Structure formats: structure tokens, C-alpha cells
Amino acid sequence: MLKELRPALMLLVVMTVLTGLVYPLAVTGVAQLVFPWQSAGSLVERDGRVIGSALIAQNFTSRGYFHPRPSAAGAEGYDAASSGASNLGPTSKQLADVVAARVAALRAENPDVQGPIPADLVTASGGGLDPHLSPAAAAYQVPRVAKARGLSEDAVRDLVAAHTEGRQWGIFGEARVNVLALNMALDARAAMK
Image (cartoon, rainbow, N blue to C red; front, side, top):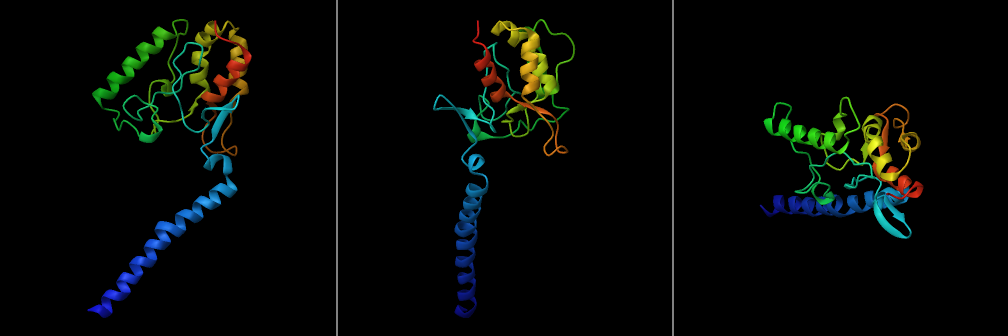
């Protein structure tokens, strides 16, 4: 019995060291060498202070800021330690109620805007922490932000256009706007009324 047990225990120890220690350390080391900014959290600083991450959404509620898409991460949303979706399906009454409430809130907050509301303003992303909006979702918020900032809508639209990123490598995904970067550009352009 010892003859069979010894190789099994040795294999357990070797595989535990390889997969539990060596491999994670190697991957972390390579990530820090090849992608140092991303592996450190993609932290964005202003005036020497960290104000957010370029890859993780944060909530902006002021009328003078573009708001990100809703978050289902954590009890209050936007909790990076609790990333996840609501897991509500398209036939869910709870999802329909949540979306209807978000539509009503958006219409109340953006009374000058008519027409359909972009889906990403009323539905959470799969991870709940998507830092991007579609250009249509950003455009929907332009009148409110311009009014709160005392800027012309054209000036705010120009900022949205300047911060619209194209498809990844020209072929993957869709055009998108990083909410934190856009709001930082707004702060640099004009203070809120």
C-alpha cells in the first residue's frame, strides 16, 4: 500500500507547488512586465490622488456628469469586490420592473430628451462594472450635462466625440466612451454651475 501511496502523495505535493505557487507567480510576473499599468489596477490619478480606475466603473450621480450604465455588483452597485450580474432573464417580471423604473428615472432626469433610451442606460452589464457607455448613451445625456455645466450642447457633443474609442484593433466590439475619462475632460473644461 505504501508503494502506491508514496507516488500519489508526491504528485499531490508537486502539482500543488506548481499550480498553486509557481504558475500564479509566473503569470503575475509576466503581467507586471508586459502590462504594468493594467496589472496595477489601471488607476487614474488627478493632482497626485487616485480618483478611479479606467477599467472599473464608478457611480456618478451629479447632473453635471455623465452617468455610467447601471450596476448589479453588490448591494448598492459599483462594488468591485462583488462583481456580477443580476442573472435576471428577458422574461423576468423583476427585470421588467427594474428597467421600467430606470426608464422613468432617466426621463425625469433628462426631460429635454425625446425618443428611445439606449439599452445600456437601463440594463446592467454582465460583470456590473463596465466603465464604458455606447456613444448613443452618452449622446442621450448631453443636454442634461451641458445645462448643468453651462456649456453649449455642441461643446459637450465635441467632448463625447473626442472621447469615443473605436473597435478594439478595428474589428472587435463596438465604439464606446469611457465615462471616467469623459467626466475628467468635463472637469478640465468647465466647472459645474
